Structures are given as C-alpha cells and as structure tokens.
Image (cartoon, rainbow, N blue to C red; front, top):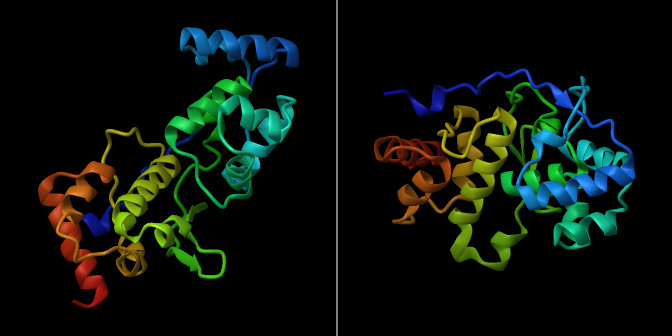
Length: 225
C-alpha cells in the first residue's frame, strides 16, 4: 500500500483548445451543445496558453473572448454575479461540474482551463483576514466554515478534493493523496476528532478505508496528538 504523505502529484501536459467561430455562432453552438450534451464536438483549433496564468485569469479572459459580460455569463450559468466574480478573482474554486458549464457556455473544451502542468510543491497557507486557504494556485473560501461549523470537514474536504483534482487533472473517481507539506495546516482546519472523518475522507478524496484511516493517523501526528 502506498504511503499517503509521500505521493507526488501527477504531471500532465495539457493542450488548450479554442474555437474559431464568430461570437453569434458561438452562442448558437452553446445552446445546441446544452441540448445535445456535447461540448467537445463544437471545439476546433489548438493553441498553447502561458503556465503563468491562474485559473481565475483564464476564466476572465475566456469570458471576455466569448464576448459575455460578467452579468450575462452569471445569468446564463444560473449563479450569482458575486459567485462568478469570486471564481475570476481566485477567491473561490469552481467545481468540476461548474467548470464543465463554463466550458459549454464559452464554447471551449474543459482542458482549456488546465492552465498548469503540475501542482506547485509549496505548503498551503491561510489568509486569516480574507478567510481563504491557498493550496497550489487554488484558493478556497473558508467563510462557509464560520457560517456552519458542523459541516467543516464535509466542506473543506469537498473543496480540497475539487481543487487538487483540478490541479492534478484527475477524474472524480481517482484518489487524491495529500503530501506531507500539506498536512500540518490542514490538521488545524479539520475537526480530526470527528467520528465521521474517515467516511468523509473516503467520499471526497476517493480513498480506500485503509488509506483514509492512515490519513487520519497522519493528520493527528501532524497536529501533535
């Protein structure tokens, strides 16, 4: 069995796909894609995007290239303007499902948003003023924890799983392993005394029971228990 704390992220090379259609035809194509459930068939042409961009930068630039205002895009996506603004500012990280909706609306492949080729090997950090957790180039909003402390583990592990999958280009079914450098800070955020922590880890990180139990032990060790 693998040691959870020594797993390194998967390196991938992501090609970026962009449509050459006109803005009007883009919107007609998005409507057609929404009805048929197909997005990739609408995409043509390739280009390489700079790895220095963040996901928020790419979301904002892609929306502008598709000639959607922020308000119009939020309306079409069925989300609030504030939520879209947070995605583009890097305050919140969209889920895999939301990224799919964004890709369909802007008429690009979901791979268009894979702006990095590997996860930066730097420890996570907390901005206690803005209530955010930065891990790699992803930023997780911590304010929901303040609103509902009982859902702390479910929210954090769900957001963490989505963020790491996006950075490592993993599917929802693939396991997400945490690195040793990530454990000390996460151990202070998670309720590691929660009896359901193992189950929540299995659900959101797609780990086996044995792996989830090992992770709980590693978190407690990182916390100094």
